[in-house]
Structure formats: structure tokens, C-alpha cells
Image (cartoon, rainbow, N blue to C red):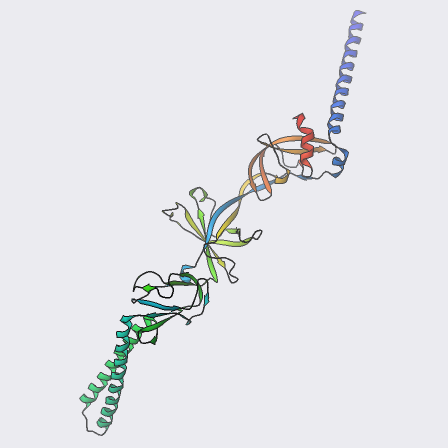
Length: 365
């Protein structure tokens, strides 16, 4: 009889405990759902966390430079004074266009030598014609004819040499004055002279002409980035001069020697520049992207919530059941974040009003 009472009491206790647990669980679920506004539950949006190959992003700094194979630096070859310049910094010039006039005492002697040689050439030509006529009439020997021919050729050679020397200085404009013409078409990117300036042969660069139809963008690559940066990689280029615009390019060359001053390698990106979008010395930002073989859980970066020095996301477990989870971030790339722990592939991540949900649920962490 006593044994039967004990058994009955034990059963009643179990039923009571079970019922209590059921009421407690139901109460907690009701409280959890009550935290979230029904309007929120109606408008909620989620996305699946997925496994994806990690996309790496690297940002480099750089600047626009001339193509060194398409610039000409003009260095005066003779002492003198600049009488007049016909260009300003930034001007577009055509090949053969007169850029400046220079007066030089040294040029006066060359001009006198040139005039003298021209006269001597004419005399030698007349003497050669006379000798040829006399030789044809058998009144002059072949040796005398050859001597006349040699004098004529010598005068021509001296004249050509002097003319070539003169052409190095420029176009013979007036007594003691010559004009310098543009050796190529392009833009004046450097000017170190003005009217009245004194110049010295072999001295400083007077001006520089550059063809800007193509430019180099040189990026600084630090030692820690060597495993990431490769020749042939696609890059995105942006600059403060054109907010919101992205220009595509490709690394055409990566130096194998560190710059001794900046302690970086130089990566070269050749960019077409027909519209003169890129200006020499313009600073640019270069972004590189690389896909690795490592697979991680990927979620939209907008789903992340940063609070108390940690990252969190809100996960939807069922239509009315949500949970806040702390996650560990491996890296970010554009709008995607790669997670090493906290969520699994296939979980539904809240991407709209997640901050409101987090605020209501964070006390249950």
C-alpha cells in the first residue's frame, strides 16, 4: 500500500515538473517574440550565408607619370640670351612649331662660316664646270679635272657639316639669332626659361615636351604585398579629381629592385589618355582583387553590427524565432565579409532592420 502511494506521488511530481517546464518554455518563447514588433516580422529580409572562395583586396597608392620614351628635354647647346618665347607651360605644340628665339655671339661666327662656305662652293662648282668643258675639248688633263672635282666635293662636305652643326642649335633666323623648333608634337610639361633669360650650353633643361596620349601610373608595392601583386593583374584606379569614377587597368610590369629611397617596388600600369584625363603627378588610388582557394562563410557586410568591440549578426531560425550571434571576421572585400566562426553556411542572416532586431534581442546574449 505504501509502495503504491510512493509510486503515485513520483508520477505526480514528474507531471508537475514537466508542466512547469512547458509553461516556462512557452513563456520565454512568448517573451522573445514579443520583443520584435509585428511590423518588423512582416518586412524582414534575409539572405543565406554561403561558402565562397575568399576574395582579397589590396589598396596601393601611386601617381601619374610621363611615358619616358615619349618625352624630349631641350638642353641648349650654345651660350646666349632668350629673345622671345612663344609658348607657356601646358600649351599644346606641333612638331616644327617655333618655340623660342635665342641670340648668341657664338652663332655669329658659325653664320659667317656658313656664308663663306656657300660662296666657296659656288666657286668650286664653276671651276668644275670649266674644267669639265676644257677636258671634253682635250685642253685639260684628267688629273686637273679630278683635282677640280675634289675641291668641289670638299667644299660641299664642309658646307654640309656646318649646316648640320647649325641645325643642332635651331633655325637660322637672323644675324646672331636662331629659332628653336618643336622636335615633336605634344604638351609643354616643363618650362625653365622666359624672355631675357641667359642660357648656357649644356646647362639646365630649358623645356620639356611630352606626348600624353599614353601615361604611366606607378604604384608603390611594399614588401608585405609581394605575394599578392602579380604582373597581369586587373586593377581599379580612382582619384580625388574624379569622385565616383573607376578606371580599369592592368599591371604591365613589376620591378624586381626596391627603390632605395622609398623602399618599395614600383608596379607600372600603362593607361590610354586620349582625353587627357590623367595629369602628370596626379595622385591615384589603385585597388587589386585576388581570389584565393580558401573557402569561408560569406555574408553581406551590411548585415554586420559592431557593438562593444565585437561583430554580431541576427540569424532567423524560424519565421518568428531570431537569435543574435557573435562572429569573427577574416576580411572584407567590397560589400562581402568573410567569417571564420559564429555562423554556418545556409543560415538565414537578417539584412534589413537588423539593428532594430539586435537592440531588442541583445539582452538575451
